[in-house]
Length: 309
Image 1 (cartoon, rainbow, N blue to C red):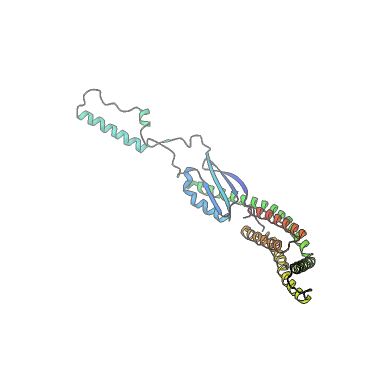
Image 2: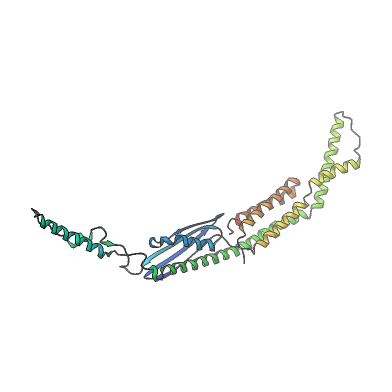
């Protein structure tokens, strides 16, 4: 198993009961599963069941499911004669004729409507019953088609995920290079911090003396070491470097885990937090260069993570 992308497209078609059904599924990025289904009017009642199958197959993403139908019989969609309704109208006409005869109607004699006029009466012509074909397997054909396209979409997502996995490995490797560059200089960083604080304390001691304040001519070394040790400990970045390494290793492990997008997004936040802390603790130019590059790399990772299921 591997991570899956949220971006994919697949389509397929099937013929059933004189109609050709085409199913298209397009998926895009989304924090949650957002499914929208469009069905032919006769099969609109299947929407709930289609949504259930989509939710079972896909965990995240904006999903557009479109199923279209086209009759293979040119006459299949033409209106048909509703004989019971026609007989009902004919009975009415006969009753009207009989009533006119009994009351001795004057003037123009009663005339029955023509065939063309009768076809225009409400209900005489009607659309084919969309449910007639369901018993012959139309519903089963549509669901089979849907399952096929969902499987194809998942395969496309896995292919895209495999490509993203390699991109993530490259970005994590870049992040690790900067991490290692900083980690190899921790002793030097400590020395620089020590020298910086020592210089600042000596300079402060000198300024106080210049302003006539009574200070010891030479600060005791043990006291100086104590104060600098406290300041240096506050600037130690060993823990942050360790946690950052742990986060990158966990991120790589997630590449073999489907539906890892949310966890990856959380790890990006944690990595960014550790790098920010390092940057705030160590104000050294070369370290700042590495932390800046690490932030840039983490942002690249975060952007790509938005496309992971």
